[in-house]
Length: 285
Image 1 (spheres, rainbow, N blue to C red):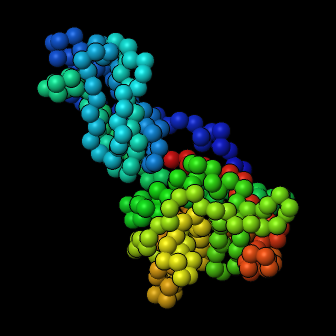
Image 2 (tube, rainbow, N blue to C red):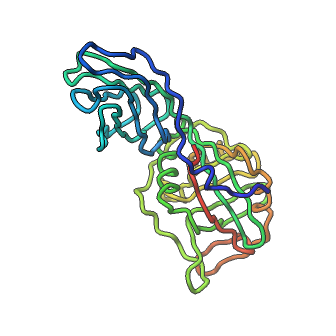
Image 3 (cartoon, rainbow, N blue to C red):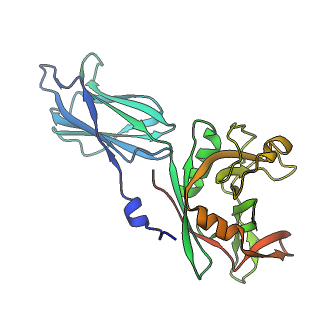
């Protein structure tokens, strides 16, 4: 199984700039190049313009899925930086313009990719990584919720609390308490209403689970170990599929086939033995 390597994957990703309409406007302001870093859904991206005369009389305007645009401190005549929160996938365009908006000194266009998440699992005797590609266009609310939990550290040290071969695994809702007993982990974000995604529940599909009778999902997720298309007909509202397993099918199969036990205190019926823990969760893209 592949080892989990967060130091490499956690590094800031700098995208190549597609720079157009560059140059000066005859007023002492000019742009020579531009770049965007950390272009990831739900995270803050930094937009940088380099040139001359950028410390005064020049600002940045953004179009596309990026909110809360703010000028960053430390501007110099040669460097101008802004940040904004990435709210969706697709094209973002940033323009360096005159303060009155009448002149464009430089323009940067870059694409926000569909997100990828790595989950590192271990039972103390082995470890493996699940690579999850998420579909923000099909299930934007579920993807955002999952990423917020990943980036906020919520899933770290939670367990896979249900496993069934030929069906799948459930995780993200329970931890091992200090006394060794299993305990529910209280969600820190509001519950999500039903969100149809039209993504099929095939082998490797990941979805947000809505417990029976609640009508809403929060932190618990399901990963299918087999094609579960029958659920699309019999239980279409129980799981919102929002992505798929891109790597680590062997890890999924190992966990799904683990020996299980009931836990009387929580009412859980199929807890893997030994306990399988999410030791790390990382948004790598």
